[in-house]
Length: 90
Image: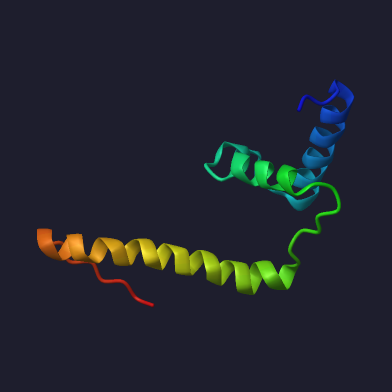
């Protein structure tokens, strides 16, 4: 759905103000996860309340760590086959 130019500009300014206020580096918009985040926010609609500090710091961080661990576990079998030794603490 196309939005009027003024609505897009208002949204862009709100986002830029948040980035500046939070000292978020501008190059964050070049990351792989940036556009999927924006799409997810848009798909949920108005009234969405973002996760609070505790949820980001605890639950969501742990969720991301577990996702990475699962990816690494998938490679352990391949690493053993090719003789690669990787030591992972944690």
